[in-house]
Amino acid sequence: MTWEVRDLSCPPVFMTSDKSRKLLRQIAELSGEDYDVCYQCGCCTAGCPVADEMDPGPREALLLLQLGRPEELVQSKGIWLCASCMTCGERCPREIDYARIAEACRAIVLRAGESRLDPDAATPEELEEVPQQAFIAGYRKFAG
Image 1: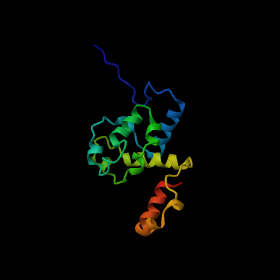
Image 2: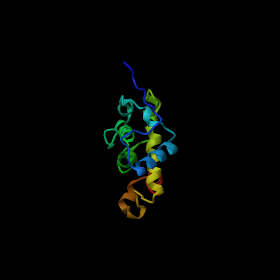
Image 3: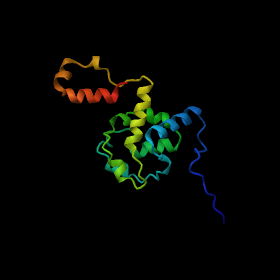
Image 4: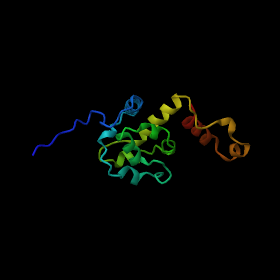
């Protein structure tokens, strides 16, 4: 019996869209992370303090990339909820840091001019209630 060894540096066979390939390359270049080596153990999600709120969570997000569906990840709310605490990268046996991937996805969205926060839409009550430092940090993270 012979076993065929798959070259992991090649994109998956089921990827057909040039847009998907381009987006996957962008995510890999911006993050510096090799999501293809993930074997879906779930350690990243188990350690994530906001995984319950994320959609998709870190493990599922990496699976989307492996399946060649980066558009779903980039359009998700999970990339915006990542706390960038780096727990996922510390726990990962393959040393994949999902926080860097989420940051790359946010950068792609923001570079396309799609802001997630409009400071002019904040009500006076919100401005009074939210600390200025938190408001500015949120604006930096969610606006382009």
